[in-house]
Image (cartoon, rainbow over all chains, first blue to last red; front, side, top):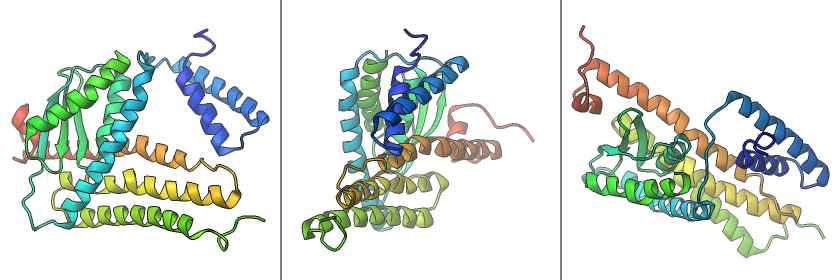
Length: 161
Length: 123
């Protein structure tokens, strides 16, 4: 089974993408399935690490959390840029020790941190397991460490590990 | 009767325009920030306004508009949002790590690598 369908998530998203870009017709569905199966075989021969999803049910919660956070920080950053010069703003670096080791989960965390305005993923050290982010409006380092660790790392670890 | 821009109800037009204006506004503020902020590390935050809800909002407006015009669900714009979101970290990390390395190699006292880790290479 896993030889024919090595990456179920990839296959499903490729079929979805194919249908979105063409048309929702049975013919395109068959073509999309063929293309995605070939693509998955191609990826399989490259042998990347296979992500194992343990808790599918938590993914909508993660997406909801991220969307809310993006809206909140968009508002915060817009306010900070427009009122620049009128108030003191401190930006700085925060080092966060991570227990998360799964490469796919780390990649997802990097997308979350980057797409949330106000935080930028700068550097991650594999051997020490320390992530360095830059925070646009830094008040308390511990707040950000707690936010990343409790809110996202915890959830990602439950999903992936 | 086919749907066209002329017979679009007012409430729908208002919703779509609101999304486009919001997206444009966020992207504009991001660009203002890109010009006005001082250090590189601060500047990388500004464009993320445009790549998150700036893009998202315009994409939503486009989906609503074309769903109405073509009288069928049109969702393929969502792919723009997905690809912009998942490819942003690649460029951001490339730029950020290049600057981190340069600051470290030049011995810039603001460099976070200098505080935590090794000394820069000797001249």
